[in-house]
Amino acid sequence: MKGIMDRLVAENRKWVKYGHVATYIPELSKQDPNLLGISICNINGEKWNAGDWEATFTLQSIAKVPSFICSLQDNTLEVLTKKISVAPTADGFNSIENLETKNEQKPLNPMINSGAIAAISMVRGKTLEDKFQRIFQMVKKMAGNESLRVNEVVYNSEKETGDRNRSLAYYMKSTGIIDVDVEKLLDIYFRLCSIEVTCPDVASMAAVLAGDGRSSVDNNVFFDVHTAKIAKAVMATCGMYDGSGEFAGEVGLPGKSGVGGGIMAVVPKRMGIGVMGPALDIKGNSLAGWKLLQNLSQELELSIF
Image 1: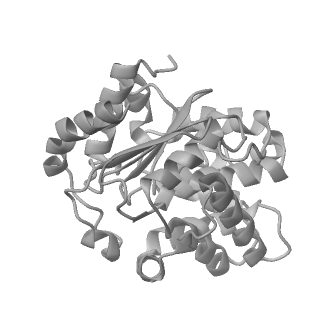
Image 2 (image 1 turned 180 degrees about the vertical axis):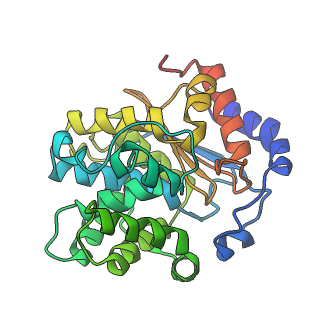
Image 3 (image 1 turned 135 degrees about the vertical axis):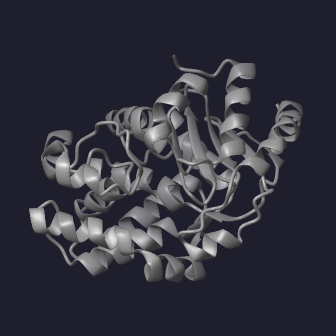
């Protein structure tokens, strides 16, 4: 496995020059666009790493997955879908048009910004800080890493420039989708996006989903099979923004990307994969990371389709 991963990283590193780091969050523009790394963790806890797997990056939209999992634990899908749909989108991850003109003013799915913000508001907790801690603890448990922290520099950069997310949240407040303090809710969202990780952390998170909620480290169960299946289904249809259909065809795995360059991919019953490559395509997905996953999926016949 290690030899295959080393070779595929080398073969796909050429793609980094065709992507661009995110610039709308100023701190992310400082990332090295030439980085490319991958980690694999199977459901038995065995791990393999290649490339720049030790490089740190922030979860960004990958944090939407544990947020959605927590909201599913605290609400039935029927209750959840009264405020958030689980439908794919052909628009960008921060689209305002989706909220104003489509789907009865509900976010289309929990894997885009508006849906994730709404999902956080539905997580159990007496205070908004309780909601944050509940999701943050889920991230730590899934990653098998209690030392994870929020990158304060990225967090402040996001908070200072998050006007599009503020517009989404205030619009949802006006239509009754969310009913809590908007600024405090967004503070949670920005902090979750700014959790700093490495490829092994993301691979471990994906391995929990591959094992239907069971830890690959100590066999603890973090969520039930039903929740895991719903999360993977929504990842497969919505996790790569408006590139989800292409990713399903080319890679064939439930996946979730973030503009920090990370991609989390799940091979059900087998393994989790964490990839990072900060150079993004036009839709906000790691360009070289996508190509690397595509080649890995083809070589190991990982597609679920």
